[in-house]
Length: 427
Image (cartoon, rainbow, N blue to C red; front, side, top):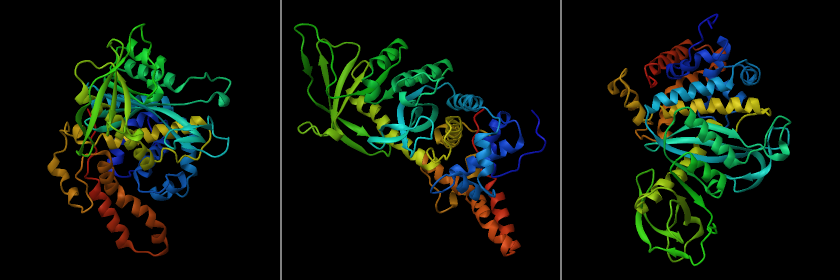
């Protein structure tokens, strides 16, 4: 669909990425607001509310952005489809580790769709809030978003809703990803899913490898005369995302005869078995996996922590809408922004042929430039690239009071310099 005019430019890095979704928006204003939300979500704002984003990107107030979320006629399913197509191009047919986890956020009152008093995992207690089940991938210690489903408590179901447990929602996400052609090395999940026979049975039927946590009192049927055996403890080096290591111990728990599914206990202290650092795992990985298992499941632990950071950085819970259709739009745009950052990781950007590394080194001269390869390191650098545009927008109201043309001209010169930094786009 042709647009009446060309969209207003922001920062080339943002514009280049958002152009991939151009056709999903029926009018130029909607596309411009899509770009401005990306710009605002990566900005260093304490809260990513629509009024705060509006000020940071040069809009008069947040009403335009609210209209974009609530009334603009774009389809979230089409936007998600385009994002997943881009993710597949980014992966270049490579398989990855699939992580499944639920995340929740406290919400006051009862007006928000599907908000109810329920267990909020990241708070560790019952609270009134909204919970979603999320699937995200890991490749070379870089995370990227895939799919999400809101959890609908039975007491908050609408007439058209069908109740599904969190493990059932997770299975739907996995099947959806398989249908779209994604390939997984292994599926990781916590004990909520490990203790679900439905979830584990579905993984086995799909012939997927998995490592899931289980409770310490996990039960297994034993034939008459069989008993539980423990192998001797063996140490291994637990590798953390920052390169640090820590010696830990692992042993296998054998219920009767060893089968396809195997059980392990991991701990930092074999004598006291501290509750916080002792885990029970169930897996169908075969072979001698004792040295690898702790690090494989450890991915889920630190990535879960990393995902919480990403949520906080990009304002996952900062929406001020109550209709789930609008919340879903917000979450999808957060996922689009999340993917934009993940794309710039060295493992993906090394495939780039259009722009040489030498052309980007001038930006690394900034004293706050981060040479690390992690998601937060990349976000830091993207923020530095977008910083002149954001600061100019924040100062413009003062420049209307005090006419300083040289200051505005200087900002425009600096913004133009930032436009030389290219966003990696997979072909």
